[in-house]
Image 1 (cartoon, rainbow, N blue to C red):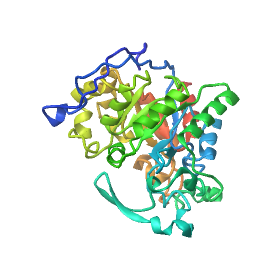
Image 2 (image 1 turned 45 degrees about the horizontal axis):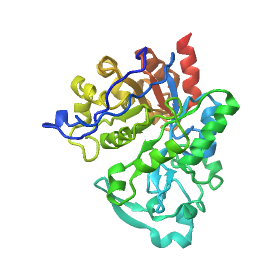
Image 3 (image 1 turned 180 degrees about the vertical axis):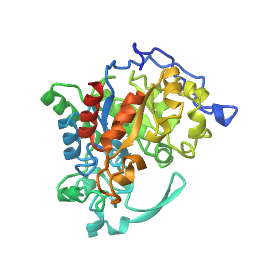
Image 4 (image 1 turned 180 degrees about the horizontal axis):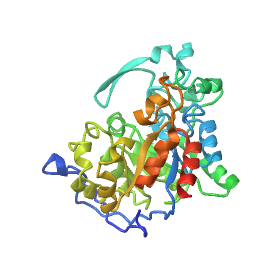
Length: 356
């Protein structure tokens, strides 16, 4: 990873002649961002410690930090009254008990989100006060039955509450815990008059979050450039998928992961976040990204066989744990700068082992 914080202009205006060059290009310069320096890979608690507690809950985030996570990841979606809450999706039937609330039965509906038809209950149709009457449930009850013990016990958090919790835990454990918010479906929310970026910027400014405390991520470059326009001096993370491309963006992920595409990402971001499969040899992505001055955080590491490469599975039961330590060892050996994981405790053990 870079030895010194980078200083570069942030290119804000979108526009390109071809899909391969269709990343944000020349426009207004933002203030230089400061990248915290580290001497070991970062362990990021994916939605907290989602392998051990229902995701995006105080219990999940707390468990992640207690067991060694450096950053915790809240996915951001808005309420009807434009408060940022943390849910993996704005459709909440799988992560809350909303279906058990007869007073909200009529709000079940079908919407088109990023070109996909989705049926259920949506955060943007509820005020924060209404969402606070719901309780979280385990999203994968057949995979992580142990987590269902917490069903109905944990409420829906706001992003502000996650910031408050991170600072409380930082004081308790004597180390800075960063929040790693992701803007979910930002183009969709702008289209319905609930843009994520202005509210996110307001929370960041209100709390005086610095580059050690907050790293902003998105799959959509247009969302990151809007954050960059606010001149917050925070690291930005371009998430990358395996197929297709960012919604509403003409470049594909494959094109974004070429040397030329990575150089364009480096004009507005500090990190890329590819799927873990994208960095495994013979892929040149890790080396190409480092050559472009980008750090690389791979996602998402899980322990269950169904989420592991075939060589690391144990037995045939899809929900049994495989050899997750071997997969971590592989990626730490390759030189990734961060891992995004549902099991931060195991990632920390693997990182310590890799360090000798």
